[in-house]
Image: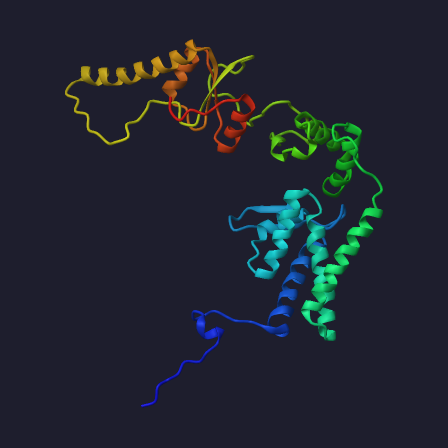
Length: 336
């Protein structure tokens, strides 16, 4: 009986179902075709007169936008070569905040032209060397093509020159209105070293029923919800921040309470009320005028808060709670 000698090669080393592609026809041309398809999707959305795309993501949420970063993000590309283009576009969004579509379209066009060179007989390594030479030459030429530069990042006129062209591509017709708002907001939070500017310091809150002409800049934090209790206004207030619910505290372990009569029942609920009232009274005595909860606020707790004239605000987003802590210089408390 002859022994069966297994074949040697990479496909035999991989699990069943895996594919091994190599060479120009199998791998390179296929990858170029995938990136070409991706660049053609976003190409028609380039510029101020670019067309909007309608994208429905896995959560059935509808997006109608011409912003390439949003389109690519919601498409959830899985092809490895096209994924590199997606990552390049996301990096451009994070670093510059603009020209995401240009990155995808330009890369797709370069790869399409490189395919012609490969079909002429050039080796991929030679094409890569050509791109390296072209990159160095481009960097030299780009230095001579500069038409203007920003000398002072704290100047409104200088920032307007930067912001207006960017807004023209996204909000054509509203660029004058929005440029003033964006520049004003940026100058409010601009650090001394402009390179350390944090985009997260400027937030947008949308209020139903308003129009784009009602847009204004507020120095501080805005939450798109009203105060929970009767007290809706507080100035120069001491703020207490809680990441937990403001309510009757629950035990960590389950227990059984045996109540024999109505009097014991009343005493049991009274004890809870007294403990909660004592906690809120201590807050009021310490000078707290505003209490912020990162979770729910119980009815009983709200009743005592109203009694001691403490304004209650509910901030359900943990990210907003972190920003609020940063603004007021507070540390969120994990329990009441």
